[in-house]
Length: 158
Image 1 (cartoon, helix red, strand yellow):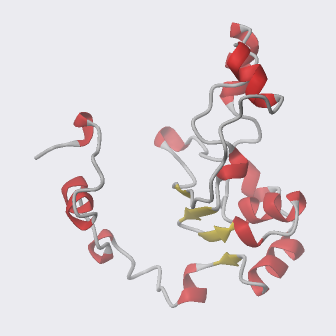
Image 2 (cartoon, helix red, strand yellow):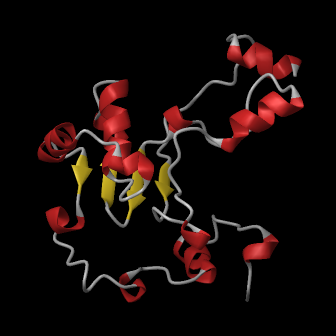
Image 3 (tube, helix red, strand yellow):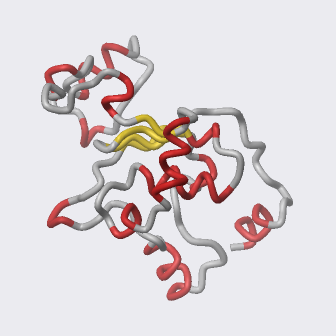
């Protein structure tokens, strides 16, 4: 817990590098549960367990792009937190988060190229299938990376 508090206060903080963190997610998960939520369950878990910070793998401000079936949001181009929020809402589809978007602002973000819909980049959604993917399996990803990507054993099926 001490390390978490120190990191939050800027002490012993690991330097944050420049990286692209692309979050790829369908807007709805199993049983039609929305993938986009206003508040992460990790906050409640942290409160219940008395943790100083919520247990998350990737912090929201580290995510540079979000890709859904609705489009892609390039969060690096956002000028502030409000634009970033609306860019996320703009690709969150028909989830409660997506439905709470400011339509005018989302269209402005689209005009500026921060949000791109499939049709904006020449993709016909009716023809977009998994067959168009360069990698169709975990093995394909390993091969495409030249062996640099080493997935956990549970994802290896070859």
